[in-house]
Length: 124
Image 1 (spheres, rainbow, N blue to C red):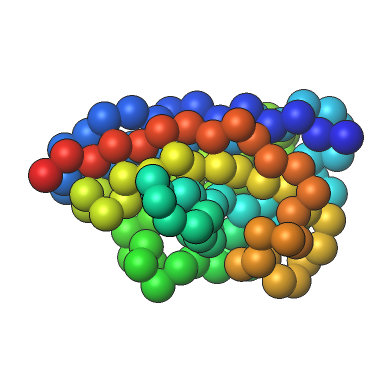
Image 2 (image 1 turned 120 degrees about the vertical axis):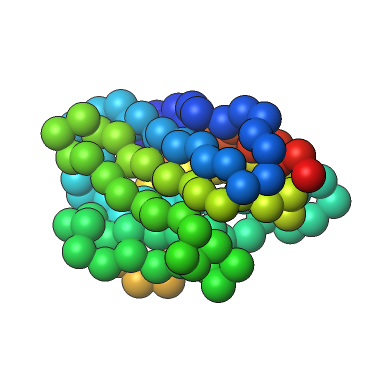
């Protein structure tokens, strides 16, 4: 079992930055791949970024590539999503998730555990 808590969301102007954190309970954090997804009002949840258990491989949606960076700290049982050059279209609730698989990380069905989400609002 894993319990996830996101933090770091908020209101920021376009061009600004935020860093989201995802704290995981339990001692199995290192056994899981981690992903970030987001859901804007009236839209489906979409993949943002993912990182494998070792941290050796990262994946990004085209819409955030070059602006967002995913990372993880196994010693702290915490994952991060650094978001730079934010745009109004990045406004959404952001969710972190953990999954046992190391493939299919852009698919939300891959993940076993989800956080409650944190709101990110980017003003123009």
